[in-house]
Image (cartoon, rainbow, N blue to C red; front, top):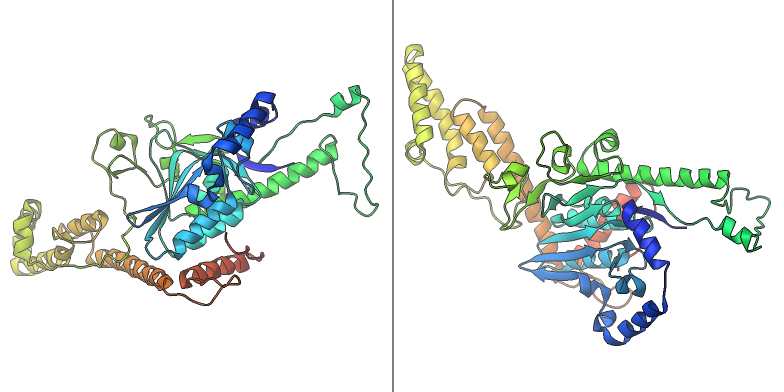
Length: 441
């Protein structure tokens, strides 16, 4: 019996549909085998594409170790194998032309088998290149498990759903039907293994399955807390408690995924980022403080004189004038010196061609107005510079992938970036005291 991390309504419908196999369905399977060329296309090529240095990996439908069956294809259920996702992620990491990775998710979840290994692979990739988990409709259960390994989580619509954090086992109890047919199940278990082969039709069997489901959920919740940077308690209390949560809700009285911290932004047409429903419906988009920074984009700050800053921004000019007037009674020279020092410190960040994000520019304006300290501004700018330096280092690792390294067991060259990626996986596994996953792909 499979253990799933999947939206319960989907699983119920899935089991019902796939258990009813009519002669028409069998005929459709044979017809698809003969006519559909996609059946003979490598699975990873079906979900992987590159455009403008961005690798896009499509994760649609239920996820499982084996991937979709022909019945899944016939019924339009679709699906993807966890191993195919890991292969696509590894390909993107090893490709020097790929600067960032997007996981395009529209999935209700999947089986427990294979999900955490894929989480580890995505997490390791995110330490080398930026990874965005993009919700294109549903990112629930095992889908959200994977998304939490990404550098950030976004949605393409306010109606995109998140959550269904939990684990489920579902099946059928045929005991009464078999009894009516005069069929009796006989199970013989070795005497030293009393906990082996517990059946779902006994209280002890149900209790054992419940223990396993609860243990698996604990791992799930830990992964969500780790990925979103929150406590386990917050995940258990605020992240839907197994229910579905919409990305953005028009009602201020209803908690949505954005307000709960389950998603970082809703990205509209044209790439504008929104963190509220009002913003998405037409107000000015909000630029997040932690917006991804392009790899290899150098941080260049052009210094401006105080008079140039004042000339370029009437608000600053007016503020400086006001502060100077206020300072006359307390010593004009000393006050002007303090104002000049603040505005001069803020000037490089307020230049029209400054490469710093809007959050830094906002803080610089507060410094110029005396509402924030120069030390706070310098610390924030240093954090952005450190992020840029980290991004450049990651890019250097990626560039090294262009040169062949030691041969693999198959004789094919192994890219240094891939080896770095594999080592990150190994370190993560060692830190948690578990065996490292096998070679991706």
